[in-house]
Length: 217
Picture 1 (tube, helix red, strand yellow):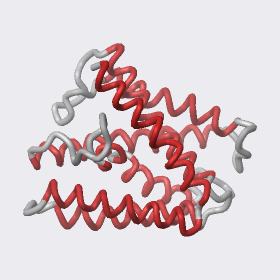
Picture 2 (cartoon, rainbow, N blue to C red; picture 1 turned 180 degrees about the vertical axis):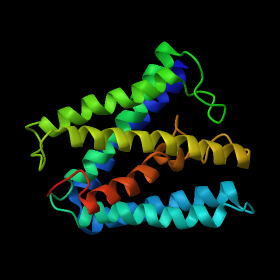
Picture 3 (tube, rainbow, N blue to C red; picture 1 turned 180 degrees about the horizontal axis):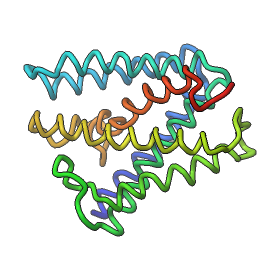
């Protein structure tokens, strides 16, 4: 467990600055970055699900998911802010779930993903609320919104969808009889293992942002 945690920690330390660089830079650099990520994700999905009935459906969904990432970064006001906010919610959801699950353990959440627990799920909700609230109120990055009940609802929804997406990808991995979607990231497996929740959270976030259900810009 300790060795696995160290691998995850080192991978995260190396990946976070790279991801932040492309998100903050935007323009063709960001577009190039998400195209590369899409190609890797598609390759992992195809390798995992070839000859399965859900192969094409997953490919179509990946196109839509990455399209919403592009739209959030390049179309909405405040440049990178919304994309960074959603990314932070997803990452803190994963971290909170991992830490709470390892420390407190407790009853299993689902047989689909045996390592997930109810305490991990609670941590997955608690961390993004704390980190997301700090991010909105932080003076380091000018926020285009204020912390309100609607924003907390948004954080909860994105976190929920991220956790459900994680479980859904685990379900497809079990159907495909594989442990990880790939081996590109030490301690995490494949790229899809790392962004499994994000690829579901971004489309939902995009729909919310586009419809002004919770945000009033």
